Length: 49
Image (spheres, helix red, strand yellow):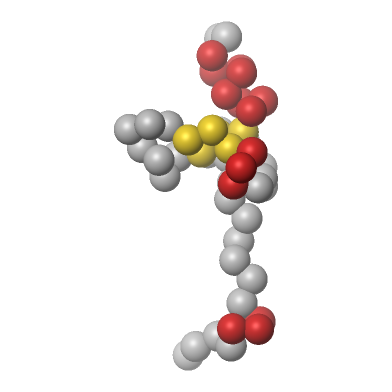
């Protein structure tokens, strides 16, 4: 079964830490693993914990 293009809605990128949905530009990508993205809040938390 295929989905008609006009009904396809790509899912929003999610933070790998908190699971929140964000725009791709609002996620920090890990250099060695660009498929991993974390939001700014989680990036700050992990940097200072």
